[in-house]
Length: 336
Ligand code: NAD
Ligand code: DAU
Image (cartoon, rainbow, N blue to C red; front, side):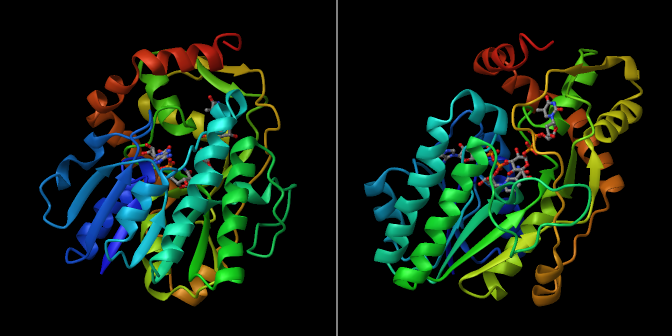
């Protein structure tokens, strides 16, 4: 079995590559990543010399490169590559459309041309928009994206669907809730707040901090995708989530408490424009049909994650230089 994984130097992609090489050491993994600000080869250090892992630096919008790579007997494409941060999509939407929409279409064309056996599109619950106080997102919930990021992911998903309907390409779309765990770039809520708390800097909480996200430990997302690859039905959507809804304030207070830092570090700042109020995933279909179950409770997962950031300070301090500082100033400069 030969897999082409895109975005495998990013947060979830690298966790997936490490997970799959452990679960299926005999599979050949071609890991394609453009190494944007979010891609980091440090994440893959432990498999640098693995005989079945090959890293290729390439852009998924590069038609020739994708054609050549997928043309080399690839059985399955798993597309993680994306611009993934909502705040950056508000500052600069164009790159989100390029990578998340055009990049997906380039991959779909190459997959169609070379007859891949499965194309797995790793998508997000954000394509469903926002929930009120009750209810959950199911696979039938209409798409109603509210940010340029989620709109570009929805655009990618619709192309994936269209390649199935029009050309019969064997595709599957997964839609997962918020992930957390090792190797997450410190622009996202949990690693950002851990890093700020450790430096006794203000923790910027958007608005009233009562927005709700549904958290899943990254390894549980990887195990679900593994099952989707092997047992998922073509043309289907699978929602992935662990029923762990928490307010942002709850997350931030948990981090402060576990690090022994004071709540006075919390700073409420101007809200994110178009800020979705609540996400909550109904994972019943994935659980029933594929027998998937998350292994980590939120309480154990957050402890492990905080431990990882304490033990790997060098990994995230190396990132927080140059371009990161520029982004931080642009995003938070007039908020903090
Ligand atoms: P990330 O930003 O950490 O990683 C994205 C990776 O894609 C990086 O390694 C980057 O270098 C690479 N990349 C970006 N543009 C590329 C291009 N044009 N060509 C090749 N590689 C490119 O993102 P993540 O959090 O790991 O998310 C991975 C995927 O999972 C995304 O598709 C995202 O939409 C989806 N997702 C994320 C979450 C979450 O909570 N993080 C939840 C559900 C779904
Ligand atoms: O739901 C899945 C999505 O989760 C993925 O598709 C995205 O790729 C991923 O980035 C994530 O999107 P969110 O916008 O939910 O994640 P983020 O970590 O940016 O923010 C989580 C919540 O915390 C959100 O309500 C905004 C809030 N927040 C975030 C930051 C960065 C703050 O209050 N302050 C901050 O500084």
